[in-house]
Amino acid sequence: MPPLLLYAFILFTVALVLYTVSVWSERYQKRLKVWHLVVFGLGVVIDMAATWLTIEFVGAVVFTPHAIFGFTSLFLMALHFVWAVAVYIGDRDAGKRQFHRFSILVWSIWLLSYTTGLVSGMQRII
Ligand code: HEM
Image (cartoon, rainbow, N blue to C red; front, side):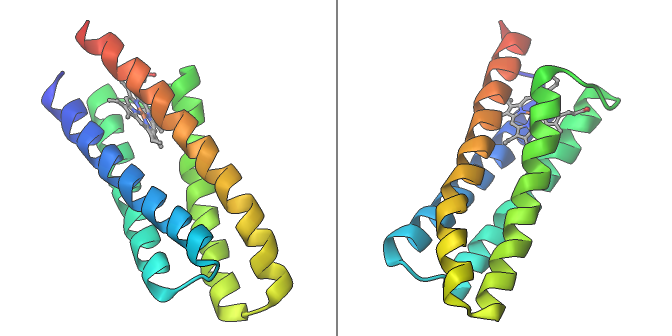
């Protein structure tokens, strides 16, 4: 795998771990805590850095199925983070319940994007 793509892959994987830990701990602990937000925020920044490395690697903005998925899931992840902060600050029960339900959905979309990226990445080394 070319070095830039390898670094992006490593960063995407770190983002995956951070995002997963944050979303699932919130689910099991049934309460959004500050550390969930910190880990989540770090995941978003690392995902952005990985996407930037991928764009550098490609040398242009391309629109393959994975790239479209990637841009969409990065946007959704960032939105999900802003929503988490708003829910934490707002401290309203209805908002928290809805957040709880949609959190896993957004995370699943992101995971699909990671998987399609793995397939695209693998095609570059085979
Ligand atoms: C959820 C995680 C991921 C996001 C948000 C994401 C995002 C993106 C974006 C936005 C692009 C378009 C770049 C451009 O237009 O220049 C892209 C392309 C690409 N990504 Fe990902 N990516 C993810 C995971 C991965 C993984 C795990 C790999 C594996 C190494 C990967 C490999 C690639 C490759 C090879 C391309 C070039 C276009 C293609 O072959 O489809 N991505 N990604």
